[in-house]
Amino acid sequence: MKTKMHAIAIALPLALAAGGALVIPTTALATENSGQRQDARDIRQDTRSDSREAKVDCRQADQQSNPECRQDKRDAKQEGRESARDTKY
Image (cartoon, rainbow, N blue to C red; front, side, top):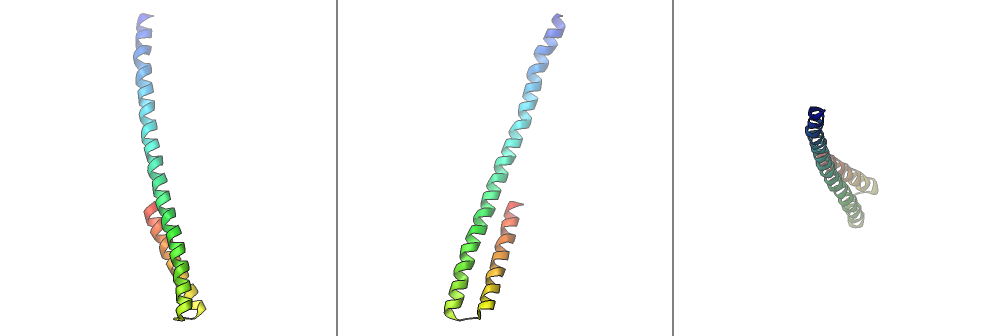
C-alpha cells in the first residue's frame, strides 16, 4: 500500500508538469499567429486606403482613362494581398 501511494505521489506531479509543458507552447504559438494575422490585416487595410487614394489621384490628373485607373487599383490591391499572405504564412 505504501509503495502504491509513493508511486502515485511521484507520478501525479510528473503528469501535471508534462501536461503543463504542452499548454505553454500552444499558447505561445497562438499568440504568434495572432500577431501575424494582425500584421497581415494592417497591410491589407493600408493597401486599401493607398489604392483608393492612388485611383483618385489618377482620375484627377487625367493620366489615364477610368478603366485603366481601376485596373491599377486592382493590381495594387492584389500586390497588397500577396504581401499580407507572405506576412501571415
